Image (cartoon, rainbow, N blue to C red; front, top):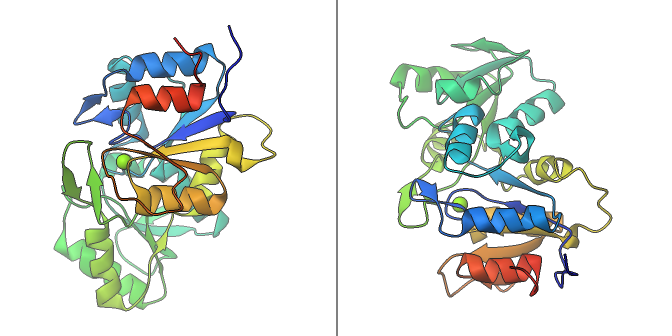
Length: 262
Ligand SMILES: [Mg+2]
């Protein structure tokens, strides 16, 4: 093994649009992560997707050929659960995918109507229920904290964009006049949860690369935490504070692993 010429000690990756492209692992992704292991660069994944459970996401990634420990996958459900514990919430209303609730629910009293401490909004697209939305709005009116697992307007699978969960969150904010607390990216806690999974002593966050195809949410939050931001994608016009921009896995490999990689 030769010395690396990379400035990074470790790296955190967004999933959709970076390593998972249009429902499959991106070209060169397996080799890239093999190189991270070869050069002993700790890494983990941090996704804002709340449409499936962590187990389902893990299985899709590993069955596609990615070698990954379960604690290297940090989901928005992990970040949400941490937030709720930290906020001492006990009773929760949940609007979203049932399988994702399993990653959050343990130890909480999950209710179908208020009063509750928090109303948690996940992915409602396949689980829309007008009655539940009415209950949620009433619970927030009565003092529940409106918690958004994420509030993104759009997400990209690397090929096309789609409406994201902000669609539901913005509606509930409009109806209740309350602003949601966002627990996933760009909340700092989400990044700190991911960094804790790197299992290394971190003295300088700028030595950790954060890679995403989403500049305004993912990279902005990472920048605020002090991570070094790497945009992955085809956009040519980016905010000036973005540290690096790469268009393909080959360039990403050179940047994170250094020029001596295979
Ligand atoms: Mg993405």
